[in-house]
Length: 370
Image (cartoon, rainbow, N blue to C red; front, side):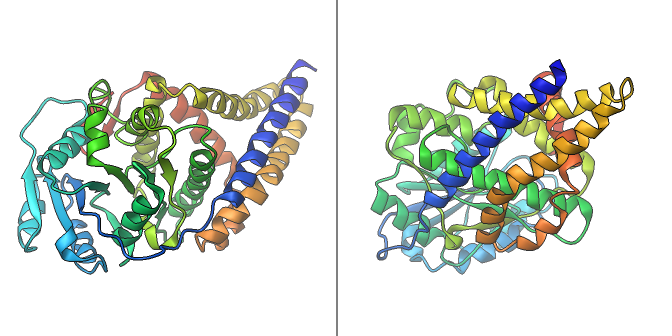
């Protein structure tokens, strides 16, 4: 009876949370620029062994609609062992910065820091070397920054996918995270973003002393920085809901790489200064942990397995309205066909990545970090 009560109690709280996110997502307006912007922009791309991707990204940036005279592209090569640097040099006008520092725990933060030092733009836009933006990406972020007087912009990211289980699961899971990001930032309930598509004022970065204080944390170049800026400029941090501002990125190619990525994301949780998010993370973790408890309890009393099945259905039903809205916006409604079947996989990875993210080490870009 105790486990039954706990399960129902957590489901109710989880349902209220999902209803909150769903209502907030509906309130986020679709942004359309009122006119052309005039802000000088520096796009900064940290890259390590990205020879397979960097050329495609630089070509996409070359085809941007934003005036070239207002755009600066900076690639920071993070000790690549392939031909990344030579590919960058083949694109005229792209600035290449070589990261010299070694024996760091957060190479990406140092790469971004070096790129920002070399930047001349007022607006820093960051993305990853394996991303692809649409032609109006820079123009949309710059216009949004001017119209909203924004100092920090969280913008949408979507995973490309084939029909493999791994890629379908990542695409759907990541879309849900994007919907939560939009809802949380719009309602100002907690800080959330993804470093593959961010914009922030260079002077705001300097005003909060950049990554100082979080520079030894392997992850968190996005959310931890966002919270630092939010504390100093609480009314000027925004989410940009626009398909024109969307960037597409590649999913992980193996389950090992996927778990390493999610452990890396979870690892920054213990360093959050944004206490508003702790309750959310704890609720989500405990609710997913309940499924494991019910599974184990079923070996002692098979009725718990019936409760487990009922909870699986209940979780799906409460999440479905929110997921339908988000997948519709991103043009990925076909992923809904897998939503119910992917629930056990989502629960397992949530529990284990949350656990190992707090206590374990992981490998990223060929390095062991913690």
